[in-house]
Length: 404
Ligand code: GLA
Image (tube, rainbow, N blue to C red; front, top):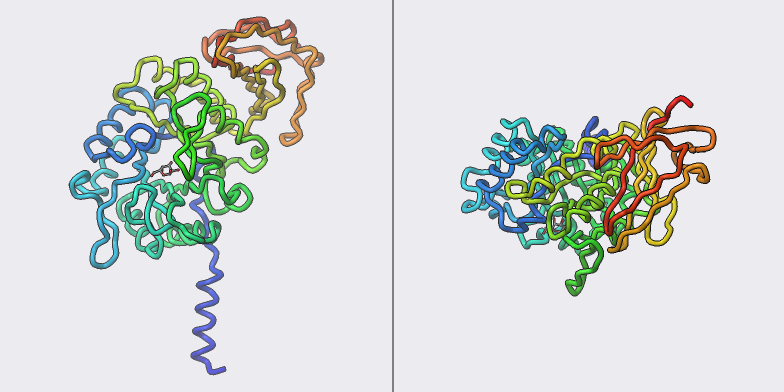
């Protein structure tokens, strides 16, 4: 083999097997932010996104930890003569860089959306064949987060397609949180740990507590349906790589109880907390739910262990989540629309978490009980817990190990 051919083969080999790393150090705890899709779908403009970003600051979401402002589908214009993607000139006349700069000036981070296929789900230009050019543009614009969808992908291999975009992002040289959105179709929890920082586990959510919205070839799902689909996935999540049960519908077409239950469960399962609410006009109750620091600290706990369903009795589920320092979060979820009497005798329960290798033996240990929603202390686990649980609501508690 002559030397030139040998060198070319080596170059091809290096290009093909080159190992790209996802941006390190990001998403050590579940990412928090806001995304435009659930509430505005394709009706987004730069003015609207700026106003939302302002509201995120003014209404206390930034202080509560919400960081990423993500524009979803339909920001796109055409590709230019060289193939570079541009913004819709009518909806985003100042361009994406100006918007990203504005969001950064508020101390927030900026996210954008694309798709691994020919087009996005909204029919805009997808990244297929343009991955490196698109990643280069995102980096130039100051993008901090990319949600990467899965429409119009024909028979693409999912792992390969997401890996290609990972390589493109790595090459672009800006740390960009990579959010995979292939709806769990190819079990990304089995292969995406080193590719993305989070991956959707299911189809789309919609603003119903329990239900299915059939769109013909696919369905969107209510909050509890999505929650049920998370069972069996907790061992795949952890710091830097999270199961994503989709963006929240808190404050949308849900009752206050349902919104509280939805938010609590997303906290219990260490889900990314991406609000999908009209932040400017949301009620005070909705803002209180989204900014509850005690619930958020359970979600953001440094151990990064997803909670699990421990038991279910008469439509009340009991969920446990191990926390740092030997503490736990416990959440009683009433799936029924009518209230239930709760009589939970801690002493009779043995809680074994095989994954976290932790257990609670209430007859030997005592915990102080904090009600995360009323912000009150409820005594200790040495007495049975008796209360009424309203319909479609939760009792969410933090248990702190106390000296007996
Ligand atoms: C898919 C995604 C949604 C949203 C839309 C946009 O359905 O799963 O989250 O991004 O596309 O068209």
